[in-house]
Picture 1 (tube, rainbow, N blue to C red):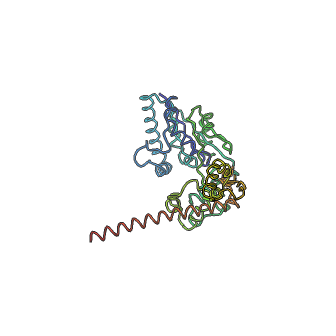
Picture 2 (tube, one colour):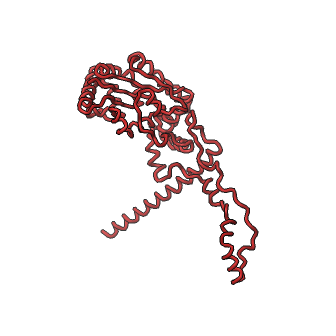
Picture 3 (cartoon, rainbow, N blue to C red):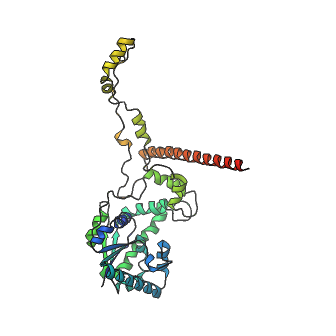
Length: 354
C-alpha cells in the first residue's frame, strides 16, 4: 500500500504552534479520515533521533545514512498502513525548513517509497522580521553577548527565506507554498491546503508574551553572555505569578467603585428609619453620594498581537510594567516566605535530632 506522507516544514513564526496543537488534539478526527499525526520529531528512526538533537543529527548525517533512515521510516509507515488502514501521515516541524538542503537525501529517498507532500508557509518580511527578532533575539536569546539590536540580528534572520530555493529545486512537484499573514487562520488554511480536517481549537494560541513581559525578559537575558532559554526566566522570575498579569489600574478602580450604593441603601430604608426612631441615631442625614464611574474600560490588557507581533510599551506599557513589578514582588515575597518556613522547619528538625 502506497501511503501519503505530508511534511509541514514551517517556516517558523507562521502559526506553527497553533497548528501542532490542533494536530495533536485531533486524534479521533484524523483517524476518521484514515490519517495520523506523527508529531514533530523523528523518534521512529530509533535511539539517538529524539527531539531537536535528533533532527540536527539527521541533517548532519551523510547521504547514505540519510537514505537508509528514510527507507526505514517508509517501511515502518507502510507496515502501519497495512496493519491499521492509515492512508495519510502528517509530520509538522518548522525547524525542518532551514534544513531543506541538508535533508535532501532523506526526503528524496522517502519520496521513492511514499507519496511525499511538503507544505511551507511564507510570511511577508515586514511582518515576520519583528516577530522573529522578538522570538530569537529576546524571548529565546540565541546569540552570545547582550540582547542584540534589531539592525544587528535581522540581517541574519532574513537569510531564513533563502531556504525556499532548496525546497523548490529538489521537490517542486511535491511542494505547496502558502502565504501567511495577520488574518490567516492556520488550522483552516491547513485543511484547505491538504484536504485534512482538524478539530477546531477553542482559542487561537498566542505564543508571544505581552510587550511588558518581553521588556522584562530582555532586561533579564541582557545580564547573561551565553544564550538564554525562556525557561530560565520562567523559573527565576515568573514562578508563582499569575498569567496574564493582573492589572493594578483595574484593581484600583474596582476598590473605588461605589456605583449603586444609593439603590442598595434605599432597599433598607425602613431599617434605617427604625434605627433613627428607636435610638435617635440619624443614619441617612448625609447627602446622597455621586455615582463613581467604576473601572476604566481601558484598564484591562489590550490586544498586543498585531501584524508585527506587538509594539514596545508606551504609556500604557509603562503602566503594565508597574503591574508586572507589583505582581513579581508579591509572588517573590510569597516564595521567600515559604523558603524561610522550610528553612526554619529544617533547622528545628536538625536541632531535635542533635
